[in-house]
Length: 447
Image (cartoon, rainbow, N blue to C red):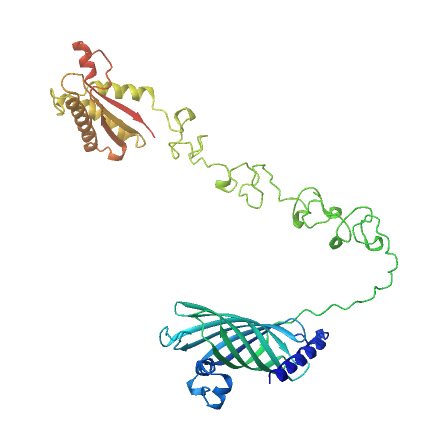
């Protein structure tokens, strides 16, 4: 029996080698899906007795005693008769190790193998038996094993590189955690790619005739070149476009500047030279700035000081006063006189009646010019505590503020502040100096 098997195997090998010369029938990359059955019972019977005894005693497992599963298979042709094949299979089963111990029930057994298969016939034939042998690895729960798959199979070419594959293997465990078992599969596979065809040697063509002349070497022959003495581009009939704006130099009024066709190849003009082109400039003949779309910074009151620098943009003034009008010397004098005639009760913020005439004069001036604004500043001498003096100066300034407000001067035109003893105008060591330092200052302005 062994001699006959060896002879059959030798004949298969010889026949396979002979067919290896036919490269047109090398199997293209192929992917298949298979139903599988794992038979551990038959393998156990063979291992405990022998193959002959297992056959005689009908100890081979029945289909209902096998564990079903699914597998995917990849085949890549190496020659017309030899292929590489890889398989990933999974089954839910109870697994027993070689020593009889179990690793649990109803868990996933994963097996992966890589094999070489030798076909008796190339893919030129409809039916081709094959043998295969390789190496594999398994995982069941946390256990890993290695095995050798060896077996026989049958490949049937159906149509357009689709195949029926039937396979039977004996998987020999080579580690303690890998058990011997039979592995049966049946499935369909189809080509997923085309192998590159062997290039055919084509004799060189006859030498071409000499090319027509191209004086400037730009790839446009002289007979079709509108600028035969200047290197150019085919899209412009051989003429150059130096600035790359899509307009050939012969039609470009600004050949060294990128421009637009509507301006005959020149850039959009900037008539006023303010850096904003005329198409975006709302004041194209007057220098301006981008934030005003090419127009100058506006000057609403027409006083020569633009609105961004004018503290009184709606009131004509002078540049020296940041665009605001200057308070006349006469008005300043009247205000200063009024300020010197504001009196309070000693140590108090209560205005004395003799202050009313001066404050009424201030209110009159303010109401005559609605644009005027007034700062009321209170000051004291250094008699007493600084904190007390600070509070008193603030209250006195506020008292003047409140009086003027009652006389019709809007609050948004008035501002009051106290500075205590911090800004003396005379020597606090003398009675005269202290009197001068106890004061209210009135400061007119327009901004």
